[in-house]
Length: 134
Image 1 (cartoon, rainbow, N blue to C red):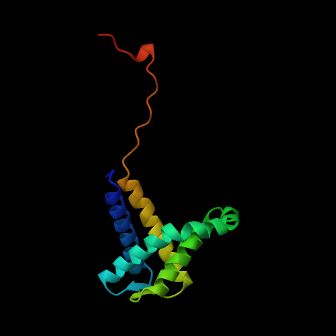
Image 2: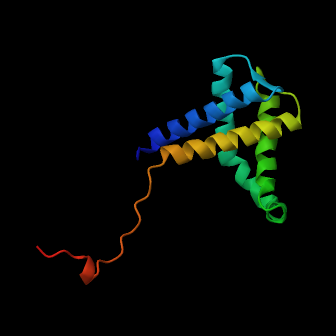
Image 3: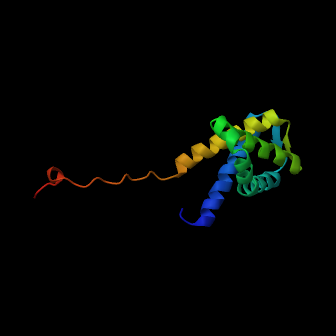
């Protein structure tokens, strides 16, 4: 999975899974069709790339003071904003957006852990006692 396009597709699938799970778990979030889900995933991806870094830069003192909880609020704000922009994707309120953003973040965290191959630790240099003479 070293190809950039495959990585992008996997990220979109993980995001789609997170949004779909949030619609099943959080009562205030729903979508009408699969194409609506696709538009939501594409728009969330775009906002995460284009808008989120700017918001994080302006909110950096708040993020530091809250020990990172501010990032969750920014994610919820973007989630709520997408709910207002996309017809067929409904987010009842900011509380629902916060829970939806939490579910999407947890899904992304878990799937990234499962899909990332384990890193091989750098081996320590062999000592003379470790070498077996034959």
